[in-house]
Image (cartoon, rainbow, N blue to C red; front, side, top):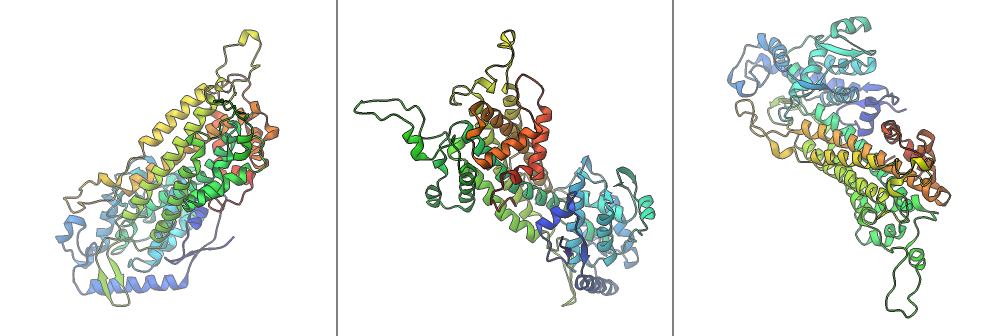
Length: 535
């Protein structure tokens, strides 16, 4: 285990996931260099306050109230008011992993040393993580422009010893928990509240976890496509390197190579030449009917072109987000080298929202791809000799004939999940709302887009689970002995959790179990491929 370095420059997306999700514990190190930079920034703030000149949000009101200058003696109290009047969030509480990611990203952004806050704030954010003290943060209420003001106020409020936190499985008063673990709340001074809430950390937390999940989902989609190709007696020649090298998008090349590796050794999904040779020659006849189609439908043949878009989207989204989580995203910023304070708009989450709007479209497109593959598997008109709705041909005795419906309900559910994913894929970016007396007259909507991306990912994981269950059912009917070694390992893992459907039964638990295999990485580990994007 390597340490997670908190210096405003070195945090990675993998660090964020490791801290945010259980079972990936990492030591948090706030470097001496970063601490000294924060001290210099704070000292400059105090020096500038002493001059009596107005400093936005420090000795002035906030937003449209910037024209109200206050005495330096009131600056600390102003910060408490800032936090208090934003405690109006609604909706569900943010998931624990998102809160952890938020605490880490906010600490790292402040550790960059431009915000003028007390170093105790950064240290207490990290102590919250070390003790797993999680502020209760409602998801809704931020437009993602002047920072994630409303959700981050719940973080600031907890650091000031107020509000409620989750601790050891209970929701408790923050002050009681801090006393129990021996931590002191922060007594805010000028700029401390603004430094905590005026940033993109809440949006970025959702976004970072979403892009990590999306990378794994791309690889899982290749697994599902490989199983569908075998179940439908497909043509794995569609994934031949020559084809994709003539249109060499990196993601497309990666998915095609991954599918080729997964299907190596399959006696069900055959190379193109073998598919062609499986048909009878015309022998002088003017017309003949192919027994095996030499070209699959788009949801199989073009799968690398769909999943490849998701892979390529993840690649550039990762770059943008790594910049975002190592940035000073509040306002104003203090330049200790020049002795100046700068007022700007780094809190505007434009890159986060554009990244999430793009990611959610790419993920929803994958949901649609998998839903189409499922339709091919269950429809007797398209599944190349499999049974209707994948019903076992000997299900029950003669009396039960006609009673069983196999995967009919699963297909209906999958269609609904896909429709919901597609519905939420519309861009949030273009729905900017002028707020706060037209001071925030152009806003990003990043937290909405990032929450949508998380929701679409969860829906698509469920779609993938249903498709995988259907593909395994189809392969049991087809004969698993002819599967490729890697796809057989995936099939066997799923079968170790979920039995073959030999008669109608409830399958909601089956879906949950396969989703768990997807999110844990167990499916990808079972395939044991060299797919680096999902590693």
